[in-house]
Amino acid sequence: MPPFAVAEHTYSAYLPFRPKAICMIAGSRKYTQCGMSMRAERISDHVYSDTSGEGRGNIGAIELPNFTIVVDSTISMKTAKAFRSSLESQTQSPIRKLVLTHHHSDHTLGIPAFKDCEVIASEPYRRLKRTAKYQPTLTFEESLILKDEGFSVEIVHAGGHTKDSSYLYFPKEKTLFSGDLIFAKTFFYAGDRTFNPEGWTAVLNQFTAMDIEKIVPGHGPLCDKEEASVYLEFFNKTSAIMDELVQKGFSERQAAKYKEFPPFYQEYQEGVRAQALVNWYHFSKKRAHKHMEE
Image 1 (cartoon, rainbow, N blue to C red):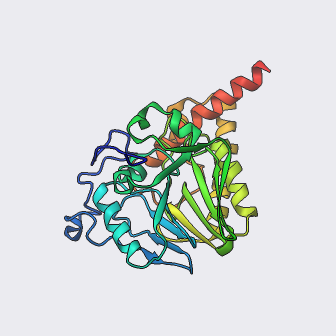
Image 2 (image 1 turned 135 degrees about the vertical axis):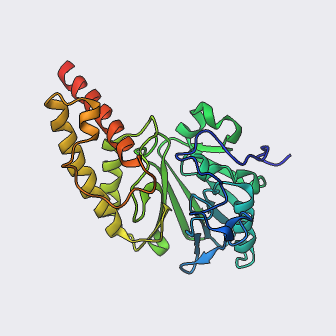
């Protein structure tokens, strides 16, 4: 019996967006046949990725001497299979491990394409009821290091975007797989009920201190550590403003419509920024109440 088995799914209520057609990107007809143009692009000696957007969530891989690690699985089995086929045409080491950065469907619906692999995720991922059909075979609480002939890959539970969010770091080539802790060049999704801006800020501080040359983000194009700095500046300023609004007694609606928050890219869907600010407001208000009780 394979280490992981699950029925194929093509859609979930837990998407952070509701596309009109999962396999259509920006209305382009060329994506009607989902996965047809997914490709594993080699971005360094041992690292591959597809950041085209066709898989909705980005996907990547690290080839080590004896096994290859895939990071996330896109939004469908077809896109995941297409990436896997492209990757296997270029690599020598067999794909043995799939690491999931978090539970959102645009990163997990392709899991069945890797049913022969060990599936790794944080322990908070396993505890989320809505991931019951996608249970990992190996979990970790804080971090996990995978080693192979002098190479190492660090997997770290961070939280922030979601309670179960993790990232991967490949020191040999100074490459970070950020998961959805980075949405490169676009406004991020912060609509999850476990969104934690304080935790997200902490991990962004970690990123800016790390020796990173390339970032494979959860969404958007490849970027470098400067993107983490851009995020960190926005998070610090927004948290300070939101805390002040809460202190002044602003309502949720007033805070979400406040015009003095710093600009930060163009949101990829109408209402994404407002939703983030609403969740930010409730986090700040809850934290303020906690401080008063202390």
